[in-house]
Image (cartoon, one colour):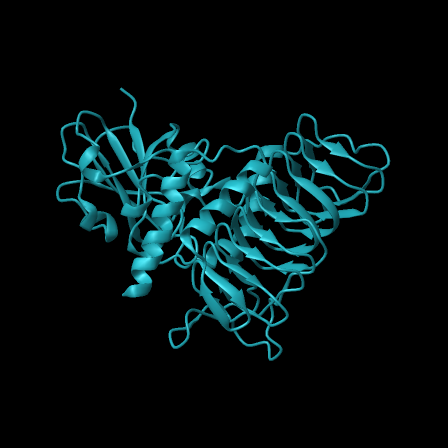
Length: 405
């Protein structure tokens, strides 16, 4: 009987602001795939569930497994539990069978439980410790520590992913387009490229998935991945990993767009991470380098952390909206569901479900937020069903409870 895979968020992943509030961390993109998809490829089976924060029990996205609790897993099957922070290498292996403590990069990242063995509880998932009597197995790969690792490590991982997939093959360059370098090009079914597009594969491959549209005036530099249905509307994109139905324009550098988000106008986005259903108003621009070239610090006032990175732009949570001309300072974090606008720069740390201009932020009302989310999903022909409303409502409630302390 095949093993069942469960991806869990530990206490470190729980702190991956601003994304951990609204989604299991396995549903974050890193390189070509979501973290959960990468673990599925490693284990060889689809994930049967995500073990994560309790207010995400109604989490609902196409292709994503349901959120489950450890006490509901049962013991009749062989179960593989792996941390969402584990990034196995392409050559990594699992033990064929039997119990095992799973390690990667010197960190315990999970276990293999034979049928009949009780599933560890939430306390163990928060901070895994070796299960007594289980042999150790080392997984080749690395473990993500901070949320900004998803930005810093993305170009290299994306390059490795795409080179492995292409294996030296390359599509014919469309008529009227221009190709530089020999990193390789992939064009999915129905991909459309207008004349005048420049592909620069000198530093890595370029992958355009099914139905991607690339407008004239676009310069795409690898490594670059555009998921199904993306629209690349012009400008310079380099070392970008964009999930499905992302609409992108302007200058975008070394950034990740989770998917279903909209940056359809000019403006700079660099060393940034965008969640789902983000809309950046025209000319929204972030800084990704301090003018004294010092390492970027991230966090709420009085609790900032030195990232050790000289370049880090912004981290923007799910369902964030910015008005036209918004400027984001280096290391800015915009919490999920925020809506910022006006002529003043928002603060470096914007709490989730904030509403307003500059420093004058209030709370985005629950009903108003959900109404807007329903409209936004409808514009992409995605149904806003009761499950979606329950999930996003619970996220709003969790945020409000945390704000009250």
